[in-house]
Image (cartoon, rainbow, N blue to C red; front, side):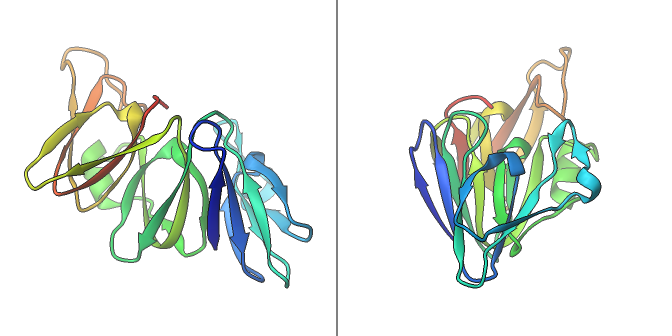
Length: 203
């Protein structure tokens, strides 16, 4: 699977090039076009919808290979995050655009359970090998943190960070409203070394 992007960073489109018989999972409403012969099968049985959104589909290339163009619903960048099989990444839930079968979602990952106190938070953990394609609300910035360097981020701007980076979630105002599901009233502290990816517009 290869990813080529265009119209970035304002209105990103990603072309995913597939080898013969190779498949990619993506939202059906993000499919702009495909080469002839690429098939689509809904990954959510019976057309189940989650939170009002259609479930993901699996697009599979024919014997001669093919491609699929994916476009996020809103304006912004598209970003292929490469996985090396060693390091997992915590990714903003709304950022998922597409993934191959070699990249998996780790539901119930202990690190996020500890961060959110067992509740369903605004991040998901991924691991594996290959590109995870992300949809971003704006251009992508990378904060490269040195050892013992610490930064603070608003959750709405966070895109992804490797699970090797130390992370702490805390309230802006302990007496104010807070939500681990949306990030309202919260900030994230990150300690290096490592790289934290942010989107330059709020999701």
